[in-house]
Image (cartoon, rainbow, N blue to C red; front, side, top):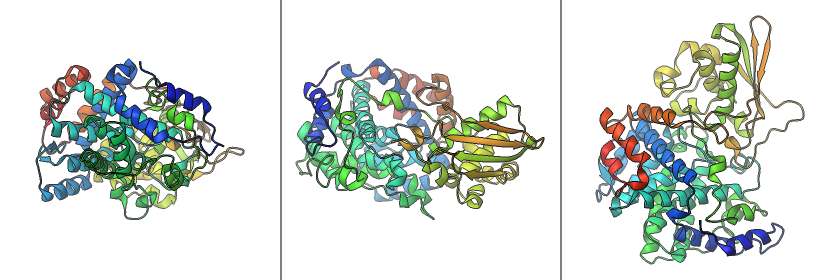
Length: 494
């Protein structure tokens, strides 16, 4: 593996109290993005990246057929016309690369079934960008695609881990996927376009001027916008990288500058600079925090799902045994997804259900699992689930436990602080505080589960995909590093 002496020296000397602690980090990161080699990637990261490709393509194709907003977004882009460069997943027709990244990136989160990093979803911010540009460019090998994606997800994770504010996406009001996606997506795009460090920094500057992702989009009727986070950042990322390649100039020092990312968006004066630049090219923090979703809902539902499933199995609970369920503690996001309780018990749309802990917990207690079909119109009206949801309430944490999360929110801070209490009709009180959830870094899922998830998601494609082609796509992704043209996968699924 290659190392960068200047990064190591910088990390060793970084001191958050020093005004100069972050000096030059944007250029360091740009140099890392421009020079990272496939040979630098540990085998574990290559394997994980291939699984991320499988998972992201699957959930995106599933959304193209299941999500009502999916057809709206696709139809809008189709009306714009333009060069037929890159495939719209699930539908099979092509659009300009930046618009394909917009649609496919939006698809990626519509089912809320996509993978997790440190409080956000790094794969949907990078993989749709990578495939859209690879199709436009032609002849991009599997190794080059893996390297570009690994570069983007590495930067996405590093920036997230440098944020020193607990539960920052809630307290500061941002969606981490979109906000960080302007950085990680532009790095992925710049890498595939062969930009040098100066032009990657320029691409970040152009992307930075488009940056957004306010959590206000999750309030009121703006439910569809929540799913389009990586669509906006993916479109902007390709646009930024293409303009940088053509010579348009962009802002410098967008990470550490006076009006840069940490000052303007995170509002932090003490970023963890060593977490951001330490071990560039030799340490890949995504390996420590990555998780795949085994249930298609917001990450904040994962601890309560895990606890509910464990209580159900260990005590052989049936729905008729349960008098009341109380969700206790967790992060600010746990409370946000639990109140107001009356609305959370009766979600009106699929995305509302996925962002409801009372509803999702009720599904788990009523059925013993949570699947894509539980968020269809029929699933949202299931009388058994709604009867269980009426028994679910929420209260703040146990005495002495503050209601706050770690730096990454749902994926880093909620496990161990969330509990589920069940009062049974025969008078017992059962409590579970999960220490891990299926699919997280400490409790990984196996390849067979991810393949089964992929098959289920692809079964909802508007343009049917044969079982033979699904099998072939799974085989090609598993052997991605040896494919001379990575986009053959899309042709197989299209």
